[in-house]
Image (cartoon, rainbow, N blue to C red; front, side, top):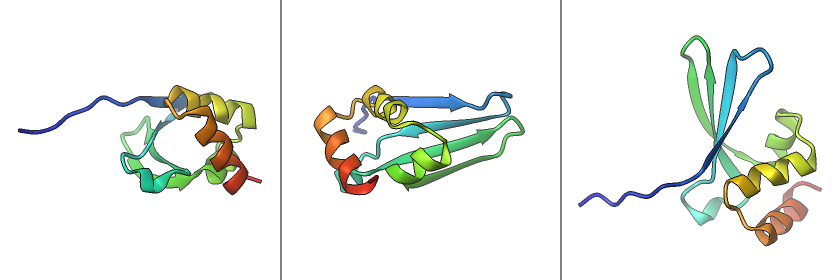
Length: 90
């Protein structure tokens, strides 16, 4: 029997509405400082990639508070956020 589970995802849309990026916490705990990012265009182009926290903050022009809010929406615990932010983002 197939094992299934639900998990949270957060989508950020560009101001013009032509692109969206969806963030998911990787299933494996091996990637504790990365998120899986799925990018979609209004034209049907789609790509997915694993990226670290720092690249997400810089690439999506997020403030630290905005990024922490994103992680909380993904049910990532506050102590994990603090540990990984200090380790990879400073």
